[in-house]
Image (tube, helix red, strand yellow):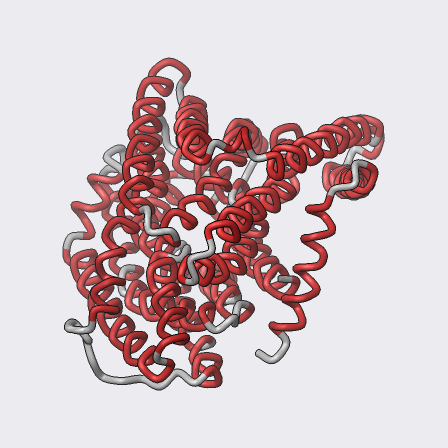
Length: 501
């Protein structure tokens, strides 16, 4: 897990650098809104693929095939590679042809030259879906074979390509450089996974395998899974749709705040889900219900161990965090304050966002697609209603409150279904995490106030985070948190297993 975390740190860190460069060069302007409007659907679809759309469905099939008929797993993988690539190509073609209407539907507040620019940028980025589709299948193949580090570096190459594009070509071709960088990055993320897949033993076969029951099983499970992930990600589209109607720059503020919000889930949820999901699939296949429940409980506790303190830090230190990352160049004080205010509100939803992602995967591993599909649909509806009603009452902050309401409602459904209040193995460690997190944030607030004479947000933030981290670790040791020891042990074991890559 240590190497996975380092890979995700590199990927997410480069993403923050990319966003900081965009903020510096373009700020929260109508030009930035145009790029984000163009980026919305390609980014959503690529995020669905990278977030595990294919992997969640394919990994259990590959695990079962490896146990029953190892030679046949590569035929299944090849068939899915071909089918997903063809499907992504069809989506890309539709996106290119109908880029203008898509932009108009997603961001009706854009008009004139800004809408035209957004459509042109979208046409450049839609072909990237082909490479992301193929890359998602390779990621599933590698994860099923306990290879995690290289797939998690995929985002790094996308971000690096966009950074190089913005720095090298931005002054000459403007924000178009970001779109071309996204396309080049999609090719790179596919290319870096090919050697690892070959070393694992993957051999490509030109087949669609539509008569193979294993291929059909994956395709059948992709339908509800796609809907669930669309429900989860659609809040971003709704927020941008409503934001485009409020004022120029609102879409940019929403996007920059969301970018910082997802840092914690990326670094904390993704390693846990990536490592535990194949194990969960094996326990389900071996009909071990006790081990399945124990693994789900472990995943929830480990996620809370990282996400809860992160949510508190984002809530109470949103202004210095945003100022340190973004506030320079075209990203002025007004942009920083608006983004920080929204980030502080979105932080209230960080815990349910993170837990819902992991719990949703666990339902798929156990074959409960219909239940989780219904729950996700209810969560989406509540989010939409909250966004619309609260935006009319509160303005753009209502978007954060609507997302928070929907996310906590969905988590409540999962809590009731799992009867989590009866699980002592979950409740007691969670209470220890809460105690340590509260101690940490109280010290963090005090240290940030005491360092006010420094008059430098970056220095104050660095000192505060170091103190907060030390207090949090110390508090976990004082309350004898077994989850902290478990996380350390997992990191050591998985680091050793990942080294042969």
